Length: 137
Length: 158
Image 1 (cartoon, rainbow over the protein chains, first blue to last red):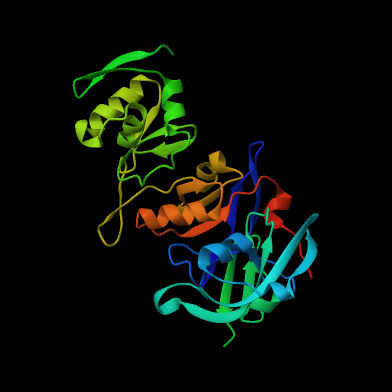
Image 2: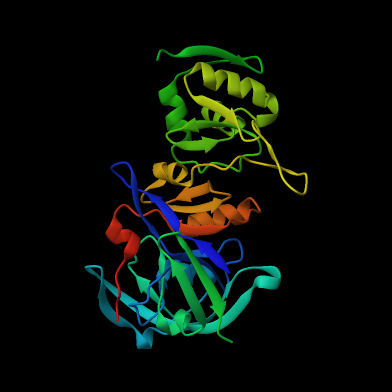
């Protein structure tokens, strides 16, 4: 499955750097997948807590952690969820832990080692601005 | 621009651009079928705008009337199918939009995009999802349009 980098406007005019994102379907949200940044430096997969609420997912607050992301202190709690990329014959679903974080002032959800990169072989070309995901299983 | 006296469905209204902007300020745009007008960077169906500004029932006027009124007030009016591009299936497809410029009015907002166009934008994901459900729509992707490189990239937490 190939995903073009996400192109973004800059507030002052021009563009921000295009980002390698993958559109991930989250269980409980059927109308639209979530643009998610592939982050090879992240151990965990982290989504906005608002999305857990919208999807009817109850993270385990007994396991909540507070940490810093991009200079922002956030609290995240995990839930094991079903996710999917692609559609039809090209869809691939997997189950993995996602840490739902509040606040989440970032543009995208974050796909880390646990929850995403352990499930896919990822090839990307920043020059050509595309990213390929191939399921490992 | 000065207010214009318009007659719609036998009733007189004094409309000006500020009244139009105020009328739609709290309304999420409904799905665009074909015609739209651009107000504060957002695309709205013309009938939705006139209904909000006048309180009239949408059955009381036509899309053509609504477009004409809004154009005279200085708003850009256009249609999605103005330059249909044939596809292999023969179905018309909208011309490819500039995805960056489509996102620009929505920096800082959550958006649902489809075919490189913004279907809906709102302050939070719940409002975007509610709109998609209410209008029985699906989209290609949802995210918050970041203001800065930092907000686009987040960070690499452990």
